[in-house]
Length: 233
Image (cartoon, rainbow, N blue to C red; front, side):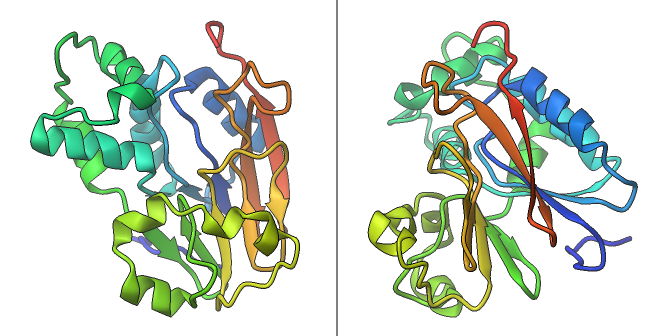
């Protein structure tokens, strides 16, 4: 059974979902995936939106039909840290309360075994010959090889330096592959030679420039979007 990403078939990357289950389902329907399609979910499946548990249920269900790679976002990293230590730290202040509520917990969180397995199986990154996928991004002053050698894997989930205007304006990145990432909301996807950023702020419906969930189809670089349709957004 194929477990690694192959450039022989389409790769569909999807940006930050943040508990927006109805919007995610509608986006997948728009994509109308083929049997041999491969998905890369770029992290931040949970928090802020009201249906994090339902999103994880759906992602597990989808992984039984298609090859899916799940990337750790900074929100998953905060949840995992909470599960390890019992200390919420910044998690509850950054949307974790909505996740806790979605699991029906008041003073803590008790994940079903299949959800524990799901989060344990998420990766800091994945890659093919031409594409590198992670949640936050890469240090724009280092090659990919140097990023992996000198930075902890968790740092890939938080990185934003590459999204500074000084780098975006030149598009000059020393990376051996094109980075595909989420994490930093932008009004429209960033499409450069060495950088594609597709977090279009699905959960941020009060900002008229955001509120869309974005999918990227590779290798053709096709963008498919779904406006947020959560009834309580």
